[in-house]
Amino acid sequence: MRTGRPPLELGTHGKITTRSVGNGRTCAIARLRLWDGELHRVTATAETAPAARALLKLRMAEQLRLSELNAWRYLTPHDPFGELTYFWLDSLRTFTDTREATCASYERVLRNQLNPAFGHLTIGEITARRVERYVALQTAESEVSARVARDVLGLLMAFAVREGVIASNPVAPAKARGVGSTRGTGSE
Image 1 (cartoon, helix red, strand yellow):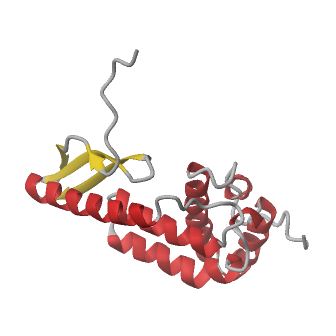
Image 2 (cartoon, helix red, strand yellow; image 1 turned 30 degrees about the vertical axis):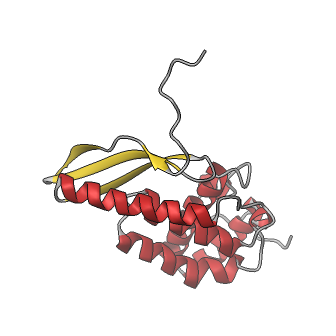
């Protein structure tokens, strides 16, 4: 017999709680059950508790709207890389307190560096060897640019792992060997 709290109904959220996060700012937090049954923790930070609650409610309403549109749409390893980037950026903007400037920076890296390199591939075709080769080529041009691109790709592929699209993050082996690695630069 189940003794815990009853599950949230589809399309509803739990109690909104707030806490001080420093600098006079307040974070509002709630659990949200989307139309596909997934349960998410959603946060929003603002200057005051009422403002944080209002922002959280807006985020939850937007996520529910998107959830209704995508209720039965799941990413697979056979989907294009661009689909993953769309879902990841949407998730960052909707479910987290990631600043818009950070999201815009990620979007720029995706548009200018990663989509040209991986946009022709499916999610499952992005392997550690391809990542290593890309990082090595980018490092030859700019170590800083290569590091930023590798870090963003690592975050993106970690999202794919969390969503169950792929089993492991292909960027992790490249990170372990370092930015300047030349391993895996041969053709596949």
